[in-house]
Amino acid sequence: PAHGVIGEEYEPKNVGAEYTWIIDPIDGTKSFMIGRPIFGTLISLLHHNDPILGILDQPILGERWTGVRGFTTHFNSQDIHTRPCPLLQHAVFC
Image 1 (tube, one colour):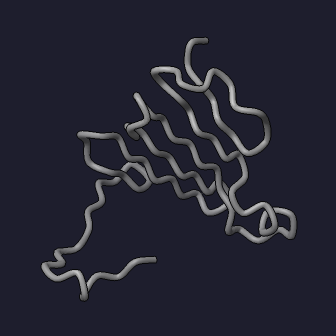
Image 2 (image 1 turned 90 degrees about the vertical axis):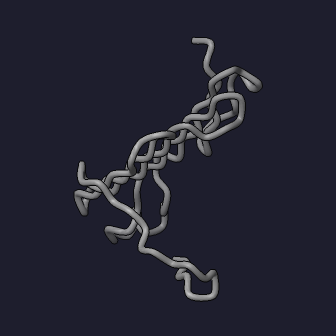
Image 3 (image 1 turned 135 degrees about the vertical axis):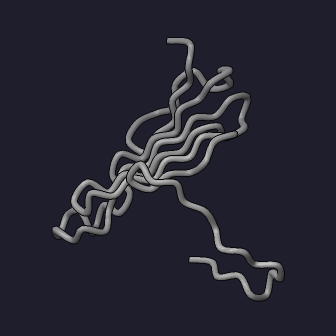
């Protein structure tokens, strides 16, 4: 009950709390409404405004990305990593 909650669908609760959840229950609302599988649920947890947890879940595609500070990021329970990229101009951002 002491955690803050910020979401698109309602007013922020307990702003300034030590822990704050940021929730977007349907990211890609228009895609969801027309039945396209490009939508998902986004959940983040902040501790003193620093992100410590992030989850992106796309239920129709059966895809889930999870990231926790200090741990390896996962895609559907498998470890994932970025590719080596020594120069910024060779990076790809999507």
